Image (tube, rainbow, N blue to C red; front, side):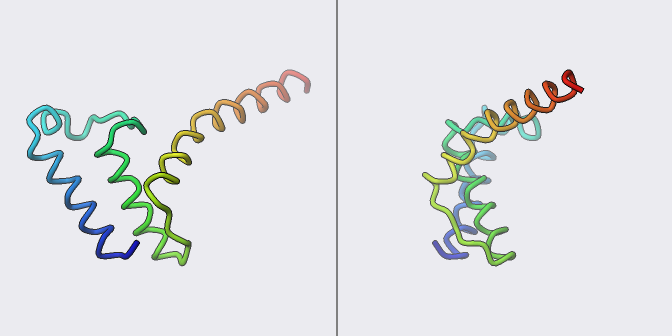
Length: 89
């Protein structure tokens, strides 16, 4: 992946949101869904642009989707562990 490809992907996702009547009606109030193709493409492209700034290796859309799918369970597990430790204390 190159920076130019990521920028093109971001612009394509923005156009997809603005040109679709259903999507444009909800601008600013989207809930993230890793199964939403446009949202996932946007997040992956923006993540790769930010990764480039910090010298981190770029990820494919597939691996970004896998990472996004693991975030909620990881947060829930961490919260449960913290709550359990508070009860033990």
